[in-house]
Image 1 (tube, rainbow, N blue to C red):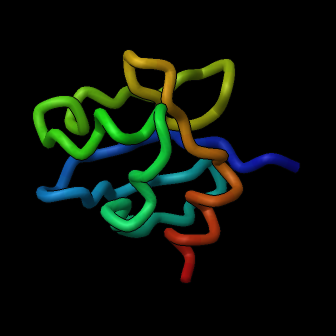
Image 2: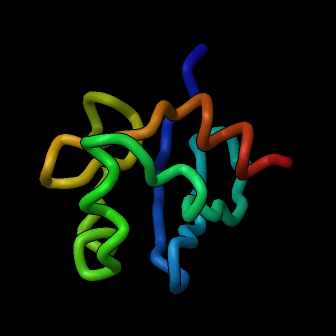
Amino acid sequence: MTPTVKKATYLGAYKIRISFDDGIEGDVDLEDELWGEVFEPLKDLAVFKTFRIDAELNTIVWPNGADLAPEYLYEQASA
């Protein structure tokens, strides 16, 4: 089953605290993941902070169309 992001809180820099529907919660540092055409704009912290939870995709997304797989975020948050 795909994990579902229920809450995401900006912590500072490129860090987000993410909570999942099964109770797992953890901090994820995405600074090293912001490479490639769709993620490059997110290096601007003003843009990075604009993420939201997409209920259809069950993950966080940005207005420019960038998103991260909920499985990846779950793995990072529970590490």
